[in-house]
Length: 111
Length: 112
Image (cartoon, rainbow over all chains, first blue to last red; front, side):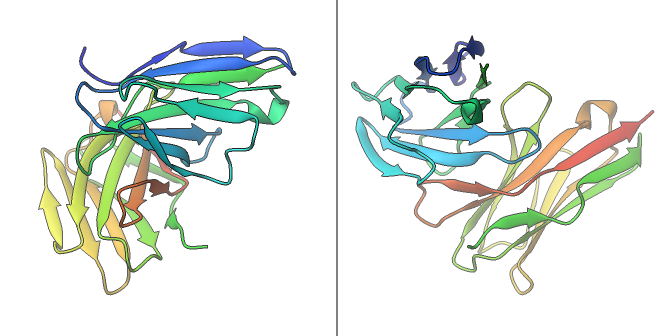
């Protein structure tokens, strides 16, 4: 499978704990995006990388959230001191041109 | 703020019929639009896209129409099949290729 992959697919954590998600983009795609999706809503943009540079961040990305793409390939999204409001599907997408291709997402549940 | 939206939250069609899903956008500067299909528990799947210099684009069983005058986008699915049952989102590129703005989605239900 040469599509976007995400790990883990599901994560259950207790409030206050830190979590980290990983995204592996389609090979050679230089752009990588993170989105958050809550039930019944469309995905909302969080942040965007071109190669290893984080070029844009949404106001949704509070200071508890941090994303990295150290070598311009895979990316990680960390949420510190999780809150119940962080429960959502976290989606990663990559593109080599205009079209963004999405991964399966990581479903986060904060208890 | 400017956003992409959908007229109908749920669309129920008979298997074999054609489906039309509509979307309104408000950012006149947007020049690229995409339709995604999302099945339960999965990520959005690219269906078809269209640039603002086109009015119509066809794929396999799907057609996207763009009316820039009224800022309206539609997705037509021919001979709808049970496998087409999903939530469909239109998305708007912010003209810088940096992020997509999604609408709330339309659920398509196909009755056998």
